[in-house]
Amino acid sequence: MFLPSVLALFLYFPEDKREYIPAAITCVIFLIGALVTMRLIIKISNREALKTKELEEQINKNQTTQRNS
Image (cartoon, rainbow, N blue to C red; front, side, top):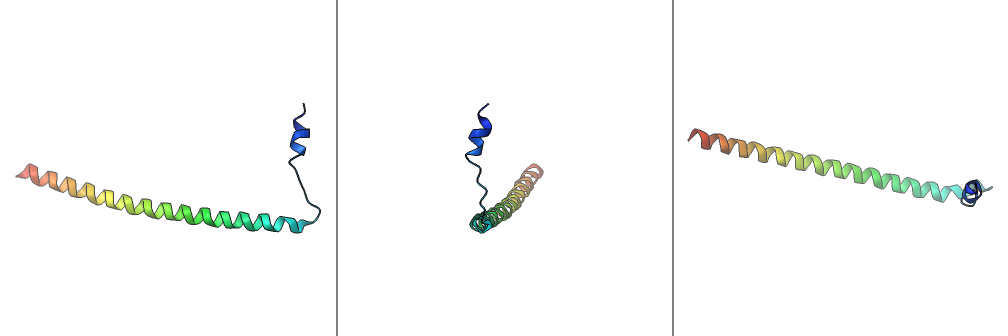
């Protein structure tokens, strides 16, 4: 019932559109930071997956040599 009037308190559309510039700059900075973080996480994850695969191959190799002995 009073929901539209409460939400109206938080809406602000400035007449001077230059007030959007700081918000846009902040948004772009955080977007770039999020993309860099995502790429870093993917890079580290791929590196760890490669290490895990090499370790798994080494363990399998050791197990097969022990079976043959």
